[in-house]
Length: 300
Image (cartoon, rainbow, N blue to C red):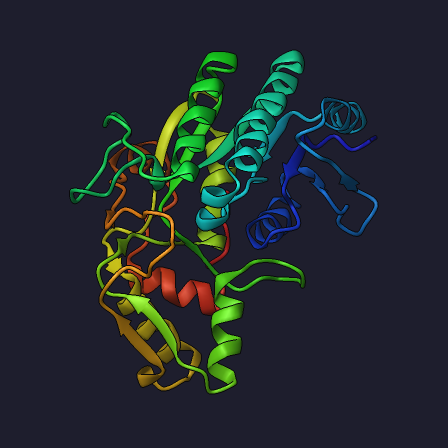
């Protein structure tokens, strides 16, 4: 490690957000990519955040100045059926990473979720009382509380929905699966009663890098588009942007039985992050365009 650049460790780098972030961070940082299955390349490493030994080994190897924790069980329904696994990874794993950051004074940015709120009203600020409906939401609340205690200098970045195309294979990128179904001529049903303000993975990466560039940035920040949109309307716009007929998107008007509870209106208000960062908060239409075609060049 002879480079003069600061070292960034991305934990959960194999996912589609991690792929976007690793590419954008390659200029300002020496990037190390960690996941259960090590990403390819000299700076890829295996890390299991449920194992103290695995986390400690990864931190000794990389000696990071900054860490982004993306690794989590983010499937809400899976968390509901396997709460023990969700707790072990989303809470226990987060605690291990936060403790490792605290030992070497590394800056931590933790990705959280709008699911910490019940979605019963329109618009949530960082200071609003949390009220999760699901196991997933509760694990994120618990993880946030642990971080605030163990590492008060950390940034907690809450997101309602992240969209974009994966830059490699083997991810859970919603847009890749969505496009594959439409390409096969299959219809996709999406709820018209769930509203979110999405962000694309490229713009999210720009904000993460800018927040690391702000020495005093700490605490909770909300990020998403300027306005909210229903999942159904989002699906229609994405289909049209990808060149598929809008009638392949079917309107779902009732929750499906057996699924974990979800907030109806997860609109995260972004005044705080707009005041802190120069990167502009995009509109929904800009997020959709960037998710499909790529984001503008990073300002970071």
